[in-house]
Length: 418
Image 1 (cartoon, rainbow, N blue to C red):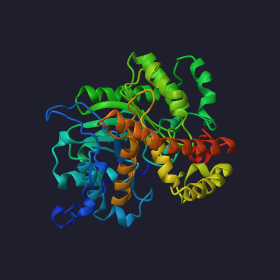
Image 2: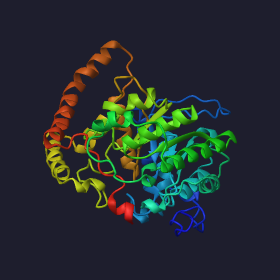
Image 3: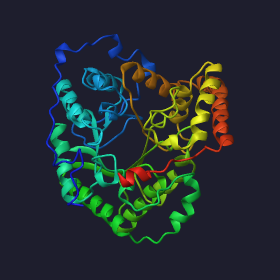
Image 4: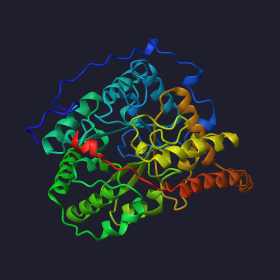
């Protein structure tokens, strides 16, 4: 690996400069504040000296502060990142998910909090190591790179500790073939594999041990893995528990707790918690990275390989519109509903402007109301029943289309060879 060219965002690359924010010149208008209780998340009470990681129900993903991902570069270079983070903090979202891959989001986030000057213990910084470019060759999980990456993240975000560090997109260094299709079909085969690591899997085990060394030094509070294929996440988390005798603090996956693909809840969540002994599962991308939107996903989206899925989205959008709602609202409502098992599952969301954040908070509160009486709860359930029935109708459309619980190939062949 060392003979390969450095990936674009590797910690040995020169550090770019990002302008500081002048807090006195940034607007603080009505839109920069919560509009009422319907936009306030439940408060998490913490002592100022308490370094425990207690997540809010929503975590703000700041991949939107990265060039060429979701937002226009002009947005990223404006005052919007600071205003979005400030509004999130005012509404109770005090955890922020970033990565070197979402360049330059770590640097921007550091500049935001420097300008806002909140006490460090009042917010959680979540970042990742290992992914420094789009292709398999850009992933480096050796101990030296991990240590350099963590030190760079600490410096970028002006802190002496990180609340969470994940190994980012662990699937990219594993040999082909990549999984695709319904992840539920692979559970038995994953569980039947001997718990003996391959050489590639051993790289990830060593990487976790490196993060745990940094955790013991107080530079990291929680250690985890993040990626897309549930099969890979299950396999690696089982190996970590078996080989090290200790389950992971966290695991994050994305696009697997959605109205189109709920295989996390339907099969893997219980295995992660009870077989891999992971303390906390986090789910990201309830809109499946833009797939479940009226615009029908960005051009780079990997689901474009499934024509049936791409064709059904506009039909679902039309039916939603005819029922005075949108595919975004239906999808967010489904993704934000509390789980029947009463498991705490924080959701990572991304917003490119203040209106999106206001809307997201309202959608979460709509399906997570607080009741002061049994009568109030019954009234809510009566009003919510037709909404649940409509969600079931949408799920059935994916089922009939053959795309329910379908997961794309990751990494793709192009990413393996690129």
